[in-house]
Length: 98
Image (tube, rainbow, N blue to C red; front, side, top):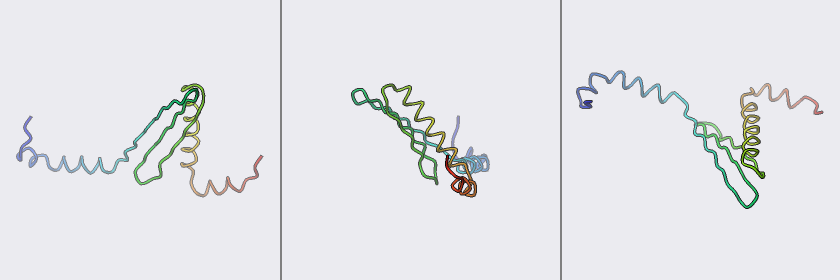
């Protein structure tokens, strides 16, 4: 493949379009941390989304699989809450708790 000035000159519109499309996409960085301290296992899941607050969910327990399942449940609950509109959140806050 040849990547000289001629190639860029011929393809600069396609290149600029590709760069613009990539800049418009949101990149999500996912980090899963597993740690162990004696009998206690810990799983932490971090979702970093540009221009938004990070979402962190963690769980501790005896087994990594159990901790991972709990952390994923907590992450799912946070994501569902984040998807709600402010109006929906206000309505839910006004409902009597059982």
